[in-house]
Image 1 (cartoon, rainbow, N blue to C red):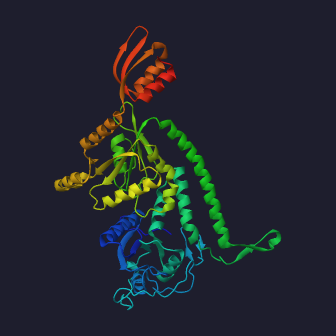
Image 2 (cartoon, helix red, strand yellow):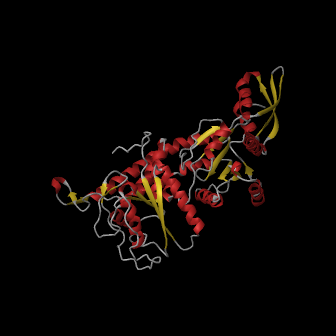
Image 3 (cartoon, one colour):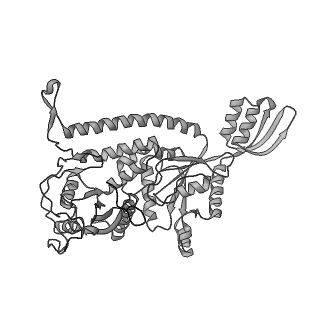
Length: 473
């Protein structure tokens, strides 16, 4: 169905409502930050958030996450009944099929006392059609039963945080590797939620339709398992090719940019390499690893790789499926932790990044902390950060001088292990002379009767490899 358009021919974005249960141990600040992040995720997905409804509870209601009164309050915005019934609604899933869920838990009356007035239907009149929402997005993860109950009670599509993230990844993946990795995570998420119409009807089994066959639900589940297995085989092939390319770069100086989504990694990548890298003010704009040469080029040259951004509550399957992408961080000599210093939550975002890297074993690499977007800070705030962190790099990608200073810092970091050496290359081995110029910093160069004598600054292993390859004295 085509979207309605406004007078300026721009399509209207679907309206969405955010819902969340604040559990014990979660502070008001943490809860608000999580909802603000969810709002940005939903906006990235193409919706406009028009209302947020929250509730404090000791635990989520078993069947509907929120209590009965809150459910009716949300239903005001959707036009639904606001009542969980025993009927199993048929809902169109993201996989494009109609579905029915086998319950994983019983729907029971919520025994927990809700907020004051929760048991009283004081939600008021329902919203007119023009003000209603088409989506309700929960900041909590939903079980298949909760999802079924909520969609039945609200009459609109319901998503949880994981579903939103998986869908964003699915839309933004571009390369074959990223698309395959995201599809595995997407199918893994959808598998227990698939609700095929007529799930209880069995297909005929065997020749002549004799015997007990599979239900449509079982057939769909098997199709998903087969698809995941095929995608894993595809990724194995892609990973072999990527590993070969990485092995060829392993001896080179390499920096990986890591950090929370939208921290400014792609902007920094563009500034450091002068390359056309996608820069967008949206979450997960970059899902595919990009490797470019640092510019102006150094000798030896330094490779910069941009990696997928991290986020709190990142689904485990996405972390696992993106391991090959994050392996760029494992191969890097130096990690640059990029944080948006203007974001009050950047400390917890930094901790999230470190935890995810620890999961793939990349937490013991040498690193530098880059406090980005300092142009948005006041001098007193910068002074406080200098006292709080040890030797951070202050940066604004809009300030060419600070980018140049980071460039120099990276170059100096790699030069710590370099030594000065003398190399004599006979004129008959001109390829060796070209390799010297390509991989080493030439301090002096003098031409003698039988060849060229170089005084270079380089890594000892590079000098040794050059001598072995070209059989130099």
